Image (cartoon, rainbow, N blue to C red; front, side, top):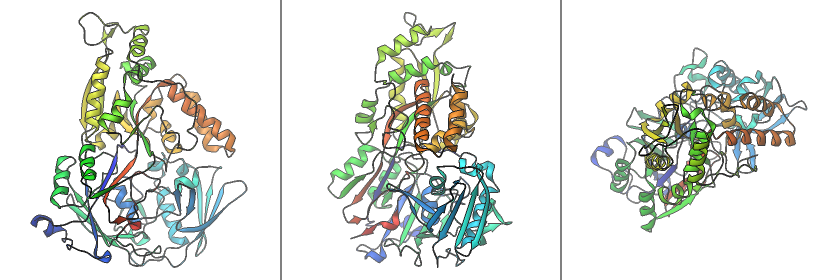
Length: 536
């Protein structure tokens, strides 16, 4: 499970009216609702699906409203969540969590150490599915010491353990009453978590309704109902917003932008909305398959030429209207360990041409693409057809590469198909993005060795063995100085090989009416903390 992600744009507004069709499925919001009678209706490009939090087919925004973890990843580091505190043994193999008391799952079942153990054991029973999370390969035992004390035992020290326990999935908790045959890997019978919202209705491919958890341990949310309405991305969503059929546009958990930047700017220019942006959350990029030896993309010189041929500033300023900044490396400098000095590669088409010439790729008079040994320099790039910006970016890059003698064919597919290509190695180039602040650098880098993620991207490079050795070492090291050095080496290797060609640094953007207060961001790009919002 890796996620193919692009820009997140949320447009929050109070609904003034609903069409007759909408009123039949989602109750219309009153014209002047009180804070206790407010509702947000957001558009999603796909159904919430099976939101079993121990699997990966469900909508992460929906899962984030319902299920919670032991700890929370914040801008200021790991903080208590369902665990009030924790102790780490001297050998850093044992983590003892002291749980909050008097918390119940949505179905009334108590949240306690026994429930935590049942959930952790259920996740580990499907460990192969979670191999992309290195923590899943380190857990050797779990134990309920008493009602509110839980111990997790690892086979060896693993510094990112708490970070991976804080993620939206899979290490979150569902009521044991929802288990099927004593576990969750074969499915669940319900979706009862401890979170601020409860799933109350779900009509497949139409909508899902979440109501505030009145007994939420963190206090009942001010917004009493969240409705996810399934709509196609793009113009359909924008029209629905303008008609008042929806009052929130929230992209799917793959990160594709479902409302274009120009439309977003028109909304804010009307004077009725406020614009709130996060710090850089991710890096949008083109991923190159170094192990596809039948393709020119397996050559480092070709990948580097592509890097030089792309004008990131134009993508940032023109295509993204300044909402994203030009990216020059795999991770933005605000990501942990990522402030590393790397080779500079700016926009330089002449350098791209020279590099290709030196590698034997010549451009015959009148030809549109270079050739070498009778083979044409032709590649395919796969983009998410649900993204309003990726197609435009792909067309721009296609034109840019044509100028240096590279023929690029564009193929639009849904995000699931693209994820499958990535996991099977059936691609030359594809659009992707890093996991984001909550997960990086460790999760994206862990994916370098995972077949379901970036194994095909990295396994054709010259320093493949050295790269994988350093990745293994950094997961084991508890020495901060050594970890910093190893991460720098890892980032340098993939940067020099140009297998991850950066485009822009993406931010999470919220456009909201001025009476929506409490807008903030988590360290993840896949969900918003609706429970912190309210209408003034």
